[in-house]
Every structure is written in C-alpha cells, then in structure tokens.
Image (cartoon, one colour):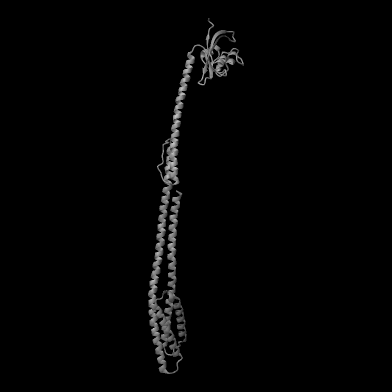
Length: 383
C-alpha cells in the first residue's frame, strides 16, 4: 500500500513538474519574443520620426528663406539614432534586403545633409541655389520613399511578430489551463484510487469483525492483494480459522466436561443409593484415617449424623481420642494389605452397649498401593 501511495503521489508530482517546465519554456521563449517586439517598436518609432523630420525639412525647403538649421540637426540626430538601432538589430532580425535599404538610407542621408549644407551656405547665385535646392529636394523624396517602404515592411513584420507573440501567449494560456485541468482530474482519480485502496479493505475488515463478534467465527475476508491490507486480510482469515478451531475444541471439551459431570453426578447418586441400600454399617477410610464416606446405617450405629462423620478422623468421632486406637483393624489392613476382622464392644455415653463384628478390606490401585480401607460391621448383640 505504501508503494501505491508513493507511486500515485509521484505521478501527481511529475505531472505538476512537467506542466511547470513546459510553461516555463513557453514563457521564456515568449519573453524573448516580447523583447524583440519592443525593440521593433522602437525602431519603427525612429523610422516614423525620421519620415516626419524629413517631411518637415522638405516643407521648409520649398518655403522661401526658411531657417533649416534646427531641422537639419534634428534629422541628423534621428539618423544617428536610427543607425544605432540598426547596428543593434541588423544581426538578429533584419533580412539582407532590409539591411541594404538601411545602408542606402544612410548614404542618402549623408548626401542629403551635404546638399542641405551646400544650399544653406551657398552664395547669391540664384541658378546655383535653385540647382542645390532641387538636388536636396530630390534626395529628400528618395529618402522619404525608402523610409516609407522600410516603415511599411517594418509594420508588416511588426504585425506578424505581434500576432505570433499573441498566439504564443494563447498557447501558454491553453497549456497552463490544460495542464492544470489534467493535473486536477489526475488528482481526483488518484484520490478516488486511494480511497478505494484504503476504504474497501478497511470496510471488509470492519464488517468481518462485527460478524465475528456476533458469534460467527467462520468469517472470511475476500480482499486479496500484495499490500499491507492484503497481509492483514490473510492474517485475519488465519486468526478466524484458529478461533473457530479453538472454539470448536472448547465446545467439545465443554460438552465432554458436561457429560463427565453428569456421569459423576449419576455415579455419585448411584453410590449414595448403593451406600444407603446397605443396611449394615459401612464406611470408607483413607490412609490418614479420615472418614471420606459413610452410610446412614453406620451413622445410626455411631449415633452421629453422616455430615459430622465425613472429613473427621475415625478415632476422634468414634472413640473421642486424639491418636490411633490400639489393635486398630484399619492400621492392620494398611500394613498387611489383607482383609481383617474382629468383634468389638461399642459403649455409648448413655451407658448403652452393642457388640459389632467388624471387617476391613483394602482398596488397592493399579500400582499396587492401598489408597483406602472399607470398614464393614454387623450388629451381633443378639447372639
């Protein structure tokens, strides 16, 4: 799952990076185009100013006795600016034909300046003045024609470059919009995929856990993949199978225990019935001389309730002693592992006496060890 999340986030990051790189490349290229466009605007403005100044000089030239010095200086100044601009941009964006026109304009401007200087400094020879004036006017017309032609070409180029720049700006806008839209859609898809990757296994595990808590331990999760959720689902299925197996085992053990307890109850009831069905006194004594079982006949003979006999030492409840009786039959049977018998006079506190014929029998386990002794007695007082 961690790999899937990392891969999806990397896809988003790469998409954003690519869109940023593409946009940066377009913006960088368009910035260069914009700088070029501004430079062309400057050159175009210089050409227009040159045309305006030449036209002004031409107008003054046809006027009588008009002062031309300031106009000539202005023309020369703009011509120098035009030359400087031409020097800057000739190598990068002007064609060879345009460069030739610029060179011709420079030459004509020099001749134009020379003719104007000759006209302004000429003598009073009217014919010569008219000739210089005509030459200057002719040069001015040629300059105007060339500069207008250059301005027209520059305007066309400027419009083409402007249209191209606007088109590139539109492309940048479309690229940015498209990439942002694509990345946004991709982010939504990634979010949906992540939601599917995470919520589906979690929901299955939660539902399976709820079903299991209701008592259905045979619940399985169907989700499978190679992620941590897939491993969790597999471990959940293993845990479910182990819990089911353990639960069935516990149920079997509980059923067996219930059956055993019922059998013990039946056996206990049977033994009690058997003990009470024996009309002669009968009891069982362990190796510590503790009475662990006695019937009603035995209790009546000893004039003591059964519950006061069971769990007590035989010599305590029968002889009111704190030590074993002399010539004890139980002790003899424990020592010899053989049945023993004797007659015994039993005296009570109220003075009553009875004779009992007492028999003891050993109870031996599978290892040959005596675990208990049965004491059976009969009242022989009537003999």
